[in-house]
Length: 254
Image 1 (cartoon, rainbow, N blue to C red):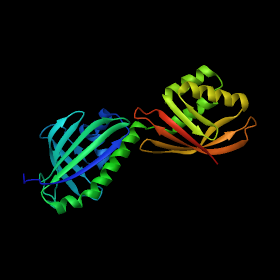
Image 2 (image 1 turned 60 degrees about the vertical axis):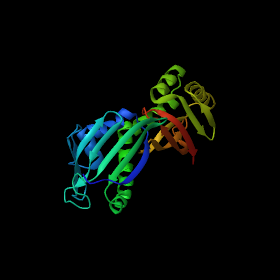
Image 3 (image 1 turned 60 degrees about the horizontal axis):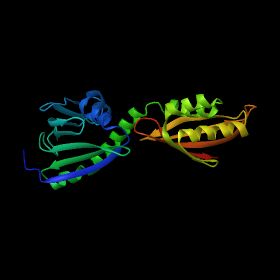
Image 4 (image 1 turned 45 degrees about the vertical axis):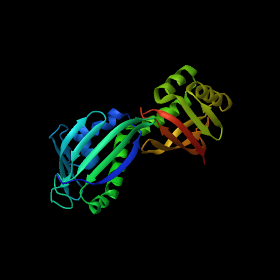
């Protein structure tokens, strides 16, 4: 291989466990979910790497090193030979655990500075796609999570409410809205109980689709009175933890 003296470096953080992120380098189906249909990887030294871009351009390479769940190295070049011939550049991806998931470090080594510069935006885009694909798998049922949250709010029995919250939220879950500033499942359970006491018969229900992006979840809601008439509307912003549960909620009333 030509001496690779020019390097492109990028780092992102993904809200998912390290092992879950690394699966995208060892599972051909997940690799294709990231890069596009027809892409594949054989995650062993000497194994083939194929990236098939949506426009039909293909890049290929060979796995040089694989060390689950922290590191993979492979060569990279285009089947057509330009701007990089097959085997003429090297990609190293390294993972490390972070406070809120996994930090992904990418280095791509090139023989020419101009070719490196051509790939800066490409990697910015592809790593953004990667973050979304991984997060979508970790948080695969956002509507169900939102509905379970509102089911906990509508639950009148304290024990059942605690169990519901424990199934979908971390112990340190926080809630902030016009009437709330609480932290922890116990405090939240009691806070919801107070709402039943002072607003008997009220219930919350999701309105429309739940919208998810990289661990942030947006959901509109409607508050109904005892007569089933709408009494208020708003939007909740959910922050999701790497384990798929709710870490924090901020509510906005319309």
